[in-house]
Image (cartoon, rainbow, N blue to C red; front, side):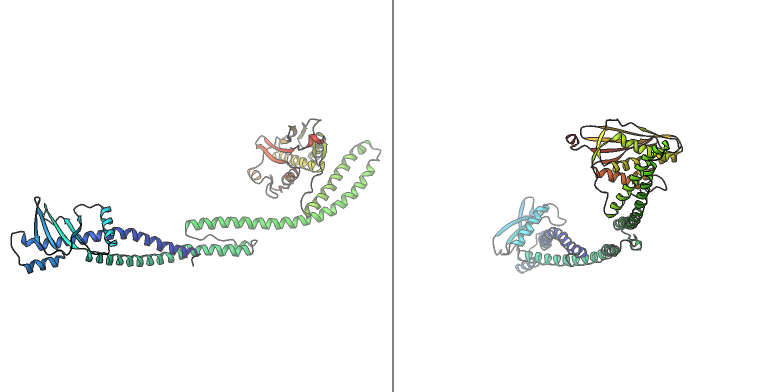
Length: 463
């Protein structure tokens, strides 16, 4: 009970209501004491009215008047003169005097709680203004025993009333919280537990229905999160199935390409000079295809294999990638430009970095072709003491907003309606394997530029 939201809310409500009642109780008791004394002044005034005309009363009548007023004597003040109007024996000396003509709230509260703390009765003097008799002051003396008893009785009634009010208020708030807060929260928790049992079932996604603004916002956020998670899990399942299928296909394709390599070896013995010139390029392409199939098989087991770092001439790697893409472009108006200096040497895995370059240039070539206008693809490089920086840029139409939002996500970052987005995802992963980064440096109506940053590390020492 104490650990639940409703239980704690119930206890806190009772505490706060009691605190509010205590804050009310303090001035109430002070006001009750003031009213008690003013009532004694009023009674004394009434008892002395008959004597203001100069009449005399018997001793018995005087005693009865004082007994009804519950005071020991009554003194009237007029024009600084004091007149003892009614009197009787006082059982003890006057211990304190209280002026009720214009007391402050602090004075009233202090005097009230001092009276509650004093258990022994005392004789006090009270000074006040009589009702409808301006200019005349009344002094009375009275015993405080009845005052303290009346104050305690009044305080107990106030406390019991406060307790009843707090219990009723807390009970009502408990019911309201149960209906409007706890039950909707429990429904949300139940929906989360049900969804957690089978997060791939889209039917278990929560449907926002709460009428409370905050809970409705929480349900809508949970609804969006569950839908995204369900979609991600389904995509993960599809990717797992696709990976299994690709691994099987790559296995068979590797065997086919290996056989093709054996046949292309004979092309080098051809007497046709054009065939002999093209044969090495064909052999290199088949070799890369075999390596790609082997890498795909390794990826199906875990992830891309670690790069085999070695020193390579960057301009030669770029030239190989450009020639492959130039053949793929055919007669299309796509130009290629290698601006990498001939003396730039970097440390990388040649096959993996070749894949990075071809993926970036293939995307650029396809973008230019889709635009239907001539364009160029430019590869440049620069180096400083820490990094190699390679840029692959084109003069195409730029990436659409959707592609930029999910740039390196497989199956989401494709620039065209039929694209898969795998090329950039693979390129980014291969660059990360080299300890570098692949970022989009610019993409607008004038073209797109990707930046590859590879750390040199201890390259200079190794050289």
